[in-house]
Length: 530
Image (cartoon, rainbow, N blue to C red; front, side, top):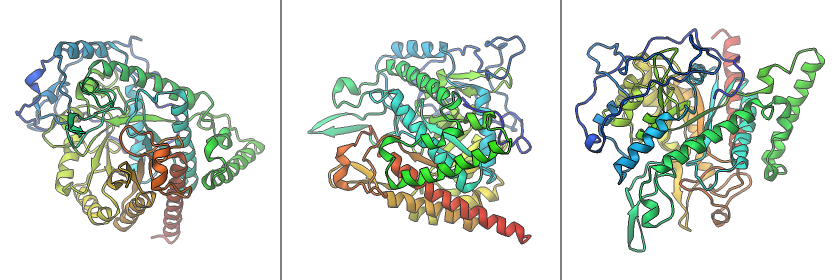
């Protein structure tokens, strides 16, 4: 769903169209104990704007194995991940029911299309070169209970607002990617949790089990994957409508303010900026410049989630009729998490064979040489836009550890998009027992991220946030101060604390100012011929 216009950013001059070369696979197997291989239906993902030769959605049957280019490389298949050690996967009690559900999902239409994922990769290549900025945000974990049109609209709307603020400050395109329409599963540090002497399996996300603390709810239920698919498809359908149906038109920039933020400091700042944009549009119209072009009346918007529940991801993987490559059609972009990024693990094995743009979550535990190896496995052709490194380690570690990662990647000649996730390295427990994050700590990590890239001469490519358009009280601080005492009043998250709309917009203004200063500094150097 590149919900959008097809103009703007093009990185085709720097992109290579080579097929993926694949690295050797390990012979160890810890997941195959309960799984047998199923044949893949030759369903291909076709971009709506890319007609096939025979106008059919079913492509001519293509080879199951992706050909290897690198000398001595092992072959990848859609099921080769099952020969690897798979962490964080649920243990379903009924294998026959699981197989039936997966076959059903395999028969469902793709949620996104291959051509849209390719477009996102091109945009991310621009961010890698410092010519665009990624804004990636949304729920920590989507839930079945909070699924509603209003919640989807509010998150989409705050992302639109933040995008305008960042674009105005940076004077560069902003790539809007939601943690939406599929961000259900969550990795857990402990397989079990205990309350009042009762020990039960941990809640792993609504597409796996329930959050109610009882035995029945915590049993992994494969039927939840079907409900998750339906919710993701419905969410994406609404997002498409918002993005292309007039709601996201730049002429509506003054109407996007959320009701509860309207009279806040951030709401006032946004309205002031929106009026400046509105005046610029009026000037364009008076000068005879059209404001009815699709670039002004629609927006591009993509979806993403963590690639965690591999059986589900495999069931939604399709072979593209135009390129012959495999795409995971559950989302435009997927990322591998801190707990599942083992070089010889099942998640990396699955991801290396799909052609979607990929993210790698990186903490202070990441060794620079290991990062280089991981990028090589996932992007052996060094294709710009293919890999986004999402750094999450806290401000202090960011200043100490990130420079070594940047230098290692640069020495290897690898092209990646560097993105800051200031959320996961700053989770603390409040006196009341609830998890929270301090706005000041989040802001400190963002500033450290920009400082390091300025010091290293590299590009700060984007921001990755757990946030919501709702007026929640989950993170403390911000200009409309949320205190520890306020947390319990509107604490709705199923997993980790999120920034509310006011805090998100405040952070966007601060980042926009940093982008503005960076732009002015670059222009000054260019004018001096440096």
